[in-house]
Length: 125
Image 1 (tube, rainbow, N blue to C red):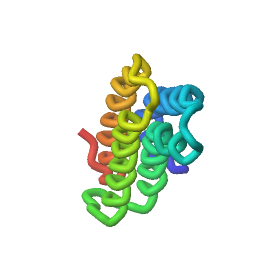
Image 2: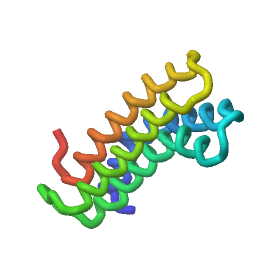
Image 3: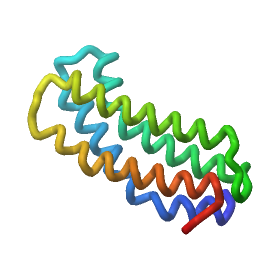
Image 4: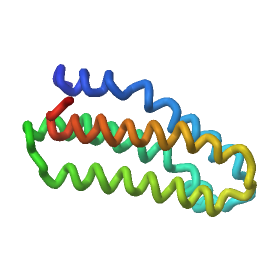
């Protein structure tokens, strides 16, 4: 890993913990769903973490101002995470306080989107 990639990862590492916790909580508290539904309804946090690691990894192959295909892949991964959040609202068997976990989860996803986009483009504010 280059120093740029380590620096980018240091900007976002704290926001990787909350999505993982949210995914684990959804996984362990949805026993009544079948395995496919459990995976789809609890994958959101892991998808957001995957997007973050993809942005850090691919930044080693992009240049300043580069709006390459990798940006679209990053956006697609974030979009898959958002779809998983919506799916978990629809399929989760209990309409309870567990959905409040999505507030910090979505905030972390937005931050991962923001930092990941700057990381890929090498254009920081």
